[in-house]
Length: 309
Length: 280
Image: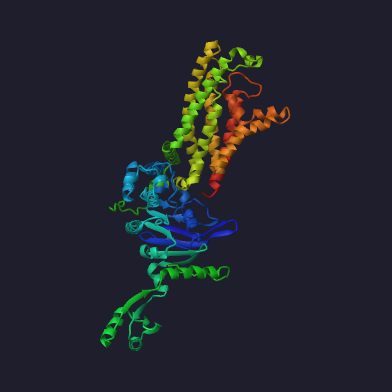
């Protein structure tokens, strides 16, 4: 479990992280979202003790990171996948990390297998592709078999298969009861991977809650119908209590009924449908709106739109 | 791709993480630093250049002196130090060791690996100690081996003029060891400068400035400031340790050791303060 309380970081005049409080629970994937420059990386660096907070505290498993001995057994972090000496072989990169925390060398082989780098273990870090470098970074995070994982943009540079693999890996790690905090600026990716979302903008907490809650709050969904009988179908649907908006001459937007109901009503009335589909509100749009709004409210006394669970 | 994920955990914080002794953390950090040093090519190259320049320049300059033996000035004859030319290569070796020492810190800042290092060992002072200890042992072994080698080669060359000394002669063994200690302390200062400056180019420039350029500038000062200050410069203090004859422009061997060790301690103290205070 990771717990941040009133975490604040100022660099000169820049307020990178502003009074941020949140809890990351074990056993689920927590997505840490925010636009570029919103303070995600700074927050993650503070969690692992690299940057000292200006004020506030953050603990991992109830302890400050700096007080941990051999912390890789407790916390694994991927902060910057390119953080390997380009001339050092992939296996040796993991070897020195293992040595520093009394992790047996046999575990190095294990994690190389987990991330699929066994064949490339002898290659120098500088010769690895972006995606392989990312896998090496993930291997380093898994090295100590930690109960807490902190991954900053782990899918950067990965191909579709790699993205799928990371998604699967994060889910299975959380399934084993580990705490998984993963940052991204891609809302759609997080909607697929995470159970819980912590969204920040300009260093402040904007939203914290389950993915389902966020989807619900972001405006639900409607049914799009394309039909030559728009007038007749529209009247029929309104009779059933739906809100119908005519988007275009043959296109209706229906709220209040599921696509299944619309289809059955149309069939019952013998009306032709060209298209019938459920339209989900774009999470990306909702996310943009949330972070954008926050930027507009900046400087007022209005509290951030927080929804702690 | 096969999915082999570690066995189920979510175990509470292990005793290793909460109760390990700091000495254990230090030893692990030393092992880790040793692995780092032995797994990049630059280490081996810099050490080879160090050995070759120590032995090569020492042998070469001693041979030149012997070749010009009958044309020496009176000052050269009266102030002849049988080890001076043998150890001439240390002036080059200290630059190699300096660059390597700087890289111990700055290469990690350049690649971002310093964050992994600090993440793995949050006890930053202890980590600095581990880096310094590991590097010092490596430099001590390499320097001592090359100093001993060049001593015997140099004296063998001088023996053709019956001018060589034995390792058992007074002050000689001390001078040979002193040459190695000089190199170790330069290495320590280099690590500290690397930790303070964090950029390779800047740290190397400062180190070379102190070792090569400042001695020249100080010589331009009026008498007696130039000689008085020169005595206490790191390069002169280091040379004092490997001299057998007492030169007026050098401190005593012990004085040289104390001054150079003083610089090492002072720079390390600054490094350990900024390392803890600064964000990584």
